[in-house]
Structure formats: structure tokens, C-alpha cells
Length: 499
Image 1 (cartoon, rainbow, N blue to C red):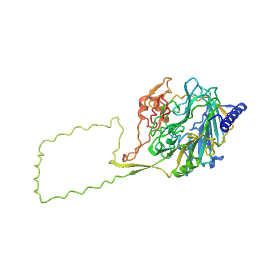
Image 2: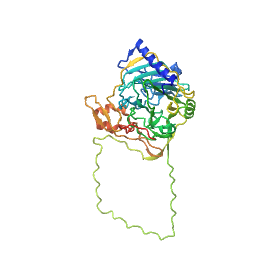
Image 3: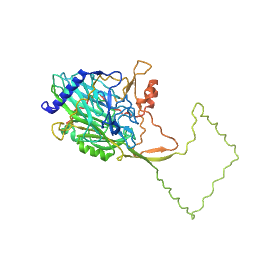
Image 4: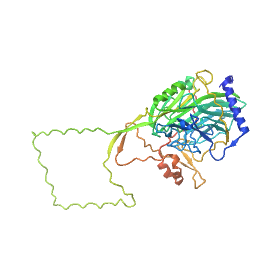
């Protein structure tokens, strides 16, 4: 945002001032428990239809100590109340893979960043403040290596079942920072087919940097690091796509906002929401009018039995000369004794006799008539919010009851942050060891053949539930890991502007 954009400057200044004032009056220091809140789109949660779990640093997937949680996960990210009355979440099942990061080039030419993600790790941030009400949440935090402030304000949007967030990045230093990049990454795990969803991206191509927009990178890799200095990887890079899947996937977006002079801010909007079906989600997008958005949909799956007609028998030509019978076999010779059978039951489990195998064809289609979840952004195109009536910023203010929380600390356990390895600190030792995971893709792709029969397929736990196994030994854990997180193929090479 340009410094002469008075409305946004006043909003950012007022927000920071109010947060400082609240903390000066009654600061509450966060103790061992994680600070955060679950907010609803209604002041009476019993009447709410969507819920958002916001952590202290503004990222999602909050484990509520007061006991609220969806039926399909232990934490709340983006939850929707289904028609049966149950709350089900679309970002927290399996792994808490949602987060953000900011990278800038400081006046000394160093590329510095701060990022937060409960799965892939956090770093480069100082402590901050957090506050919430039943329907709002606010977070303020700062880069550790240069005074750049990041504020996230969440509240109810003007569109039903959609939360809006105002994200403000402010240079509170005395010199200009350049090439400001914000990354948001999330893993769609859409009920009721978590880990097997269809994903769509819209608005990416028309808002790339080369087209005058702010999109530097976009893909379906919901397991990428939140650090914008790393390469996010994935598929469907920098293109629009519709209903790709089914697979365990998500969305990652890098937005490049240029330079910020001392005291200058940049504001944009983020939307998280849900709808009863795809048509209602598209209607919500029509009202929101974002620049870029992502849909997550569940999967309709069915088995289609094969149709194998029996070929008619060849007619017998009785006019041909009959074939002479073969010579009879002399059975008077001594028969060969069969080999002794091998007893395979020693030390092995008893296996019941299987019914004959048969093959069915697996058919997947997007569940357009079931709840559809959305992530959207405005202010990442050519026009910044707050400048024109069509690009509005809701007047969010920090929520009361501020907590002061410490800087996010790196975890002992990192899941595939490099895309190839994860590091584990065993409970029985202070030594770290590195394991290269083995990914097992058990989800049949469209049109693939699936063997059916008397056996029941059993879902393999995701990495979060395998930490005990990892502690028992690298080999055993690596061989039982389900392919939950795709390799992000992250490197130290940051995506740079092309064109």
C-alpha cells in the first residue's frame, strides 16, 4: 500500500495502537497452553454454521482446550455444520498443515523471513499479541530479523458461511524493505473423504506478476513449508484448473507486494468458508469477487463390476475326418511319491481360506452436491483493497482480551519440510536422527482396477499418529508411513519473478 493511502494507513495505525494500549492496561502472558480461539459466524455458537480455529500467530488448526472440536479431527481449522448436526473440518484431519510466512529483503541485502506452521515448522518470528471474541480474532507478530509487523484480523464477512481476514504487513523500521512476499499454504482434507479430494484453482493466470498481478507462485502442494524462501513445488503450477483429483492435496500461494518504505503498509483480504454444495460455493464467490480462489470438494466413489460376455462356442464341423484317439497311458508303472508338504504354520499367523478373487473397476467423481470448502484472496490482483468501492476492507479492529504470547518455537518433529527427510527427537534419547520416509500411495486413481473380495482394506494412520512407532526405530516407522504428505521438493531456492 502506498503511504498516501490514508484509509488503510489509519486502519493499520489504529489497530497497532489499540493492541498496544490493551496490552499496557491488562497484559496476560500465555502460559504453557497454546493461545488461540475457535470463532463462529454467529454470536450464539449453537446457531452457527461455520467455525474457524485461529492460533496465536494467525494460522489455523487450533486445538481448543475448552473442548470444541469437529467429529473428524482433534483440532479446528475450517469447520462446517453438516445437515446431520455434526461439525466436520476440512483442514485439520491428518496433519495440521496450514500456515503463512512473510519474506523481505532488508536494507543490508539479506533475505529474511518469518513463518509459522504446526506441521512443517516455524521460525523467524518474535512474540506477539492475540485477542478474540466469539466471532472475531486478531493476531500481531513481528519478524525477528527486521522490524516488519504482520497483523491478521478475522471476522464474519458480508457473505453467509464465509469468514474474512484482513492481513496487514507494515514496515516499522527506518529503511525500505524490498520484494515483500506473503505465502499461505493449506492442506484440504474435505469430509467425508478426507485425504482424497478434488481441488480447483481460479484467477491464478490472470493475476500472475507477468500479467500485472501479485501472484508469484501457486500449486496444489498443501504440504509445502510456510517459509516463502523455499520452493513450494507441487503440480498445476501457476495455472487455473478445475476439479483435479482425487488425491491428498491442497493449495499454496505466494503473493509479491513489492517494496515498503518506512511506515508503509500493505493490506489484502483472505476468505475461508464453506457452502452446502458446489453451486452455493460458486454463488458465494460471485458475491465476494476475489482475485484468486481455491475449492476443496469430497469424492463420490463407486465400484463398477466388469461386464465380461462369454464368447459363443465354435461350431463343431462333423464333416471332417474324426481324429484318432491318443494312445492309452500305461498306469502299471510305479507312481512317483509326492514331496513332503512344507509346514508353513510354524511361527506364522493362521490365514483363513480366501474366497475366489474378482476384479471391479474404481470410479471417482467430484461430489458437487455435497459441502464445498473455499479459500480466497482479494487485493492480490492489480487493485489493492480500500482504494475503490469494489475492493473493500472491512473495518476490523483488534479483539479485546489480548494475550501476550512467546515467539513460535521450532518443533522437535518436522514432517517433510525439505520434501525428502524428516527429523525426529526420540523420547528415549536426546540424539536426533534423520529418516527418509517411504510413501505408499494406496488411493486408486480414476479408472484403475481394484481387487475386491473377502479382505477389508484398513486405513494406515497418518504421520501425527505414528510418532510412537518412529521412536521405536527408523526402519519400522518409515516402512509403515502412509503417503499422507507429498514431497514438497523444497530447496533453498526461492521462487523469483519471471517475465
